[in-house]
Length: 325
Ligand code: SF4
Image 1 (tube, helix red, strand yellow):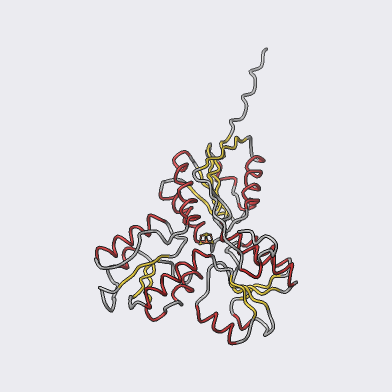
Image 2 (cartoon, helix red, strand yellow):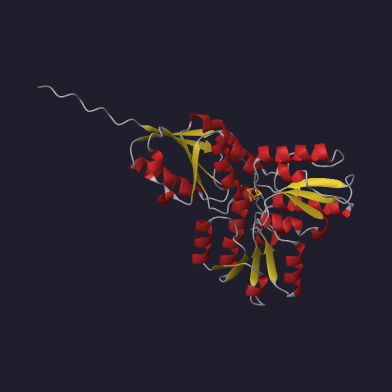
């Protein structure tokens, strides 16, 4: 009796939308802490998580970084880093009042929104900030002009906004929101307050915009989307929502260990991406974990190539080169 040859197991396609993982602002913030640990030695205090990723935080902690929620947890002679999400001016004043040595790792694109908020408020406008209540970036931006800023989280909230003067308004947004969501809220603001100033979704940073566009470009081909990122990472959560809103199952995973094999049943094409605060090595781990579950074909889909770099703070730049970072 002749035997039928065994059919080869079908290869699962793994799509890697690009860009994914670290952005320039996150790389800069991590490098600031790393350089301080090298130059100054531990402990280096960091107010809040330097970036919203548990692996990054654990790695820096193992090398001597100490993460605190407030400055009162920091001794008087300490060196303190402000995280990439930015801080309210009141925090800077508190640090200066105590004579703390501080280094600001605020992403320059968050600092730009702070500058816009200050300019608008100094000019007499009320700032309408589109953002998520309680997010560290939002707390910092509101802190620029706390008496002149109103927070809006959804289109539905626009109808209930009470403003002191409808002719003196500027809207801004958190940098890591969904582009479509901000555009919808901005449109609702313009309908309700025709004189409002603002520039659509322009405050959303290039990294958030690009990661969303890269996922949007592949989501129709995917049966499943895995987003590597921590639960408190805003831009990572927006990637999950983007896939879900396209009708595709998506999961936010801290790392490869969080993959549930049940998700893969019937998933012939899996897209794997990562939020801007998630290290690239975690994506590599996920691809290896998928390969261990059956044959895969890995296909990278480059939507945009990023070239953005940010300078380190002056005192941390290499003296010889002052090379841009
Ligand atoms: S996600 Fe955007 S705003 Fe946040 S650190 Fe990266 S570039 Fe800066």
